[in-house]
Amino acid sequence: MPSGPGTKAKPRPDWLACREAGPRAFGRKIMTDAIFSIKHRYAERIYSGHKCVELRRTAPKTPIERAWIYETAPVKKVTGWFEPGLIYPAMDCEALLESFGEEKCLGMQIAGTKEERLLAMIEALGDKPLHAISIKRAQRIRPVELRIRPPQSWMYCMKTEKLG
Image (tube, rainbow, N blue to C red; front, side, top):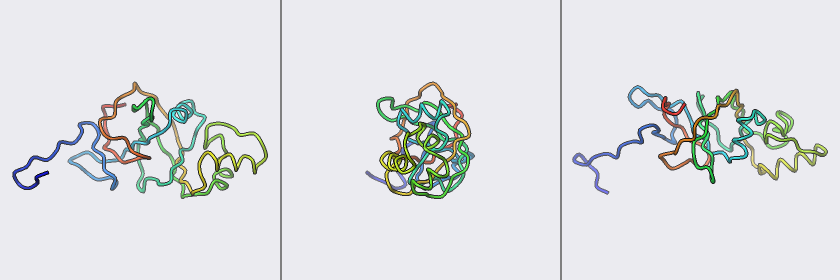
């Protein structure tokens, strides 16, 4: 692809210009939002208030005002957002279970002893340390197509007024 003084730059998507590097100023817009790819069943638990913590291997290094929820297949749309609270340092499943409990992490209760609950969480989440992002409140919106490639986990995006 040619580049240089005589070539045109590709236009950014009109409502989301995302960067993996983190918040930056583009004109007067500051990137203070993020898009999170979330499975449908977990998105439903966030909207219902049963899931109060979102878990990720990596977490935003700077505070974000709004986290847009992109539901993965079969929905493949932005269906709402949540207001993130505290972002906790990475913890293993045992620390997550002690700090938050399985209901806040997974949006459901697991029956059994502490060891059985821990094994069920490890099976559901994996054995790597995870960051916990608390969810203050969540709001469902009319589903919107994402005009960019959805993130594998999450990514920063420009603050926008067109979605919510």
